[in-house]
Figure (spheres, rainbow, N blue to C red):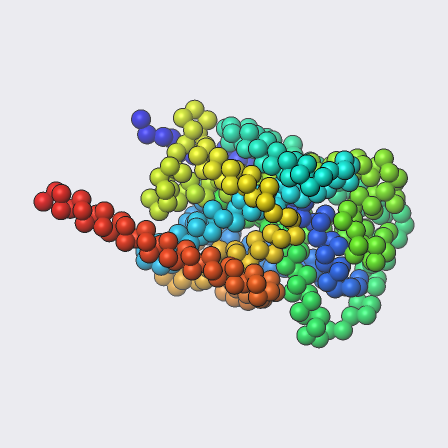
Amino acid sequence: MSEEPLSRRINLLQASAINMIDMVGIGPFVVISLIVQLLHGPYFLYAWLAGAFLSIVDGMVWSELGATFPLAGGSYNFLKEGFGIKGGKLMSFLFVWQTIIQAPLVIASAAIGFAQYLTYIIPLTNVESKLVSGGVVLLIVFLLYRKIEAIGKISVLLWTGVFVIMGWIIIGAIWHGNFLQPVQHINDGLHFNWTFITALGFASVKSVYSYLGYYNVCHLGGEIINPEKNIPRSMFISIGVICILYLMMNISVASVLPLNNIEKSNFVVSEYIHAIAGPTAAVIATAIILWVAFASVFATTLGYSRIPYAAAKDGAFFSVFAKLHPTKNFPYVSLLILGAVAFIFSLLFRLKDVITAILAMRVLIQFVGQSIGLLLLHKRKGKAFFKWNMPLFPLPVVLAICLWLFIFYSTEIKMMLIACGIIIAGLIAFIIKSNYEKRTLTTQLKLKE
């Protein structure tokens, strides 16, 4: 008996919640100090604005593609369609190749961040911290091992933690009485030159990492209700809401803690809550941050588990990944394998070692690649082909490509070389796979003769 297709059960609210809990995660709570260290002044807020701007223009690219191709797998389908029969086969293979490596890294980074922040409440040795991060991955796989409609409801529940902690941070700063001070002094000491632009690029790598996830709904395209409207809407709702929350959170923290303290802190938000409400409140706030970080691992693992499934179902990846659970109707093999690799990564790496690597690995094939693919699709199909049309086309696409290349440059030479090395390895794997398929087909034809 053939397996049923994925069910469209996720509504706009649930899709937006899945995006937002993926976006927030542990990122904004751990990169605040890194961004202030890089920019050394109140103008560190510009890094968060830069991340929001890139998310908006790139969100337009995802919206056109996601609304037109609402299928499981997201970028896999976009690259395949954008580059045509030959080029699409190569680009989509390279994307899945990278996903098998970088998706578990993304999942592991959130789990490692969870364990790192937990040390504010419970002192952990290095081994204990690794056990916690690995345990988080295992628990997430367990929670995702169920029907998609149940997952949508869990996502909305986890999403509430984002607004609880953000609301506490913002209201606390307003109550403190110095909320607008960072904005009033945002340009103090600012010199707009190449040094600032370079520093802004390095800082934006960290802020963009905190925005990643606004497109998670595209990986679940085959499970979204009314995808032509809800996919673009959920992305722009997510970007708008999270941008406002990030800016207000950073303004809040900077209005209470001196910049020198922010630079040196590993638990900025916990120390901020401690300053305005005392130690007990700081522990409670840290617990909510852990809730948000856990929710992020949940959403990230959910989205990525659909990518190898989509490729395998299309015949472009190992067929075992195409299996759906016989009763719960979700890609359980893909989920289990990515979860297993993420578990191993969570035991091997530190958070600061993976944030920049994650971005470097994804820029060329996924973000720049699918932007170029969209331009090629427009040339072949025309504007009327798309279910959603961005304003001012092709300006947002060109801006997205330029900004992503700047982010890639800002990841530094070591990470750029690693990313290019993975692409080269993928090209070799693609050639080997193609030759094997040709030999297999030739052998089958000879046997028939």
